[in-house]
Every structure is written in C-alpha cells, then in structure tokens.
Image 1 (tube, one colour):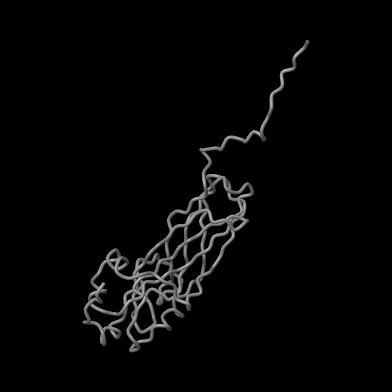
Image 2: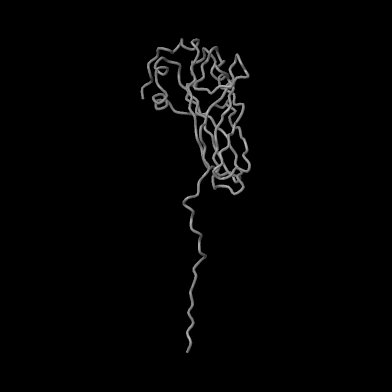
Length: 202
C-alpha cells in the first residue's frame, strides 16, 4: 500500500511586513509674510504684532512653507498637503500678556474661529521615497479673524495661532502632520476695559 503525503494550507501565506518602510515626513514648517512697507521682501514670521486696530506687522496675510520627504506610502508619490488653524482666545489682560506661550496654552483652551478660511490645499505629484520637496500653501488671511474681535467690544483677543500642516494620500488617509505656533500681540488700544482684571478662577 502506498501512502500519499498531503500538506494542508489554511489560508494564503502573507508577505512579511517591511519594518524598514518609511512614511512620508513633514519638516521645517514656517510662516512667511511680506512686510507692509516692502511687499516684495518676504520674511519668516516669529510673531504677529497689531500695529493698528486689525492691522498686523508684518502683514495680515501669510504663506505656510514646509518640506515634505517622500515615503513608501504611495507607489505613485501622489499626496495632498493642506492646513488647518486653531486659535487661543482670551481677554486682553496684563496677566495673559505676561505669560509665555507654554503657560498661556495650558491656561486657555484652543478652538477654531469661523472667520478663518484656512482649508487650503496643494497637491504633490511624483514624490520619490527619500526625496525632499519644498511645498507652499499660499494666501492665508488673518484679516477676517481680526474683524471678529473689534476694539471696545468685550476685548477678547486671539493670543496665539497654531497652524497644522497635514499630508494625505490619494485615498484621503492622513499620513503625517506637523505644526507651528505663533504669538499675536494686541494693540495698545485694546488694553483698557479689562486689562488689569485678575485671572479667572480655575
């Protein structure tokens, strides 16, 4: 009698996961604006200063620049870069003004301002794995946000802005994000009604 050796396969063999596969990466996020006096000279923004009611130095408008390093997420190297913005809104008081960014962000919650049209998108095509490409999301405008905080009405102010850069693939899956946080300094005209008020109890 001849016996046959039979090997049973339960399901298909799965390819081993490549633990060395790299995901897309975002580096060196910065905000760039053109000075009001010299519109042709771009500069990196470290903070916005309100030099007159609803007018910021260096400008109300800015671009977001970053570097995107290609990963193994998409075989065709096609991605979409887009931005969102959050604000930290609080009364214009000496106490908040004297806080550094870390203390301020731990004292007041972040939120969105409806007037900020920040959903800007820029496509990236044929980005190879390991290739670094500079990407610019253009023409974000803080003017409509400032109009929501008129001088003399409650004296609220968006003390900080947090711009988040997102990268997603062709299917809409988010692959990476990075952020930059900047201070907005209010004009002296706002430091009147509640400027000397104490901090609210926590």
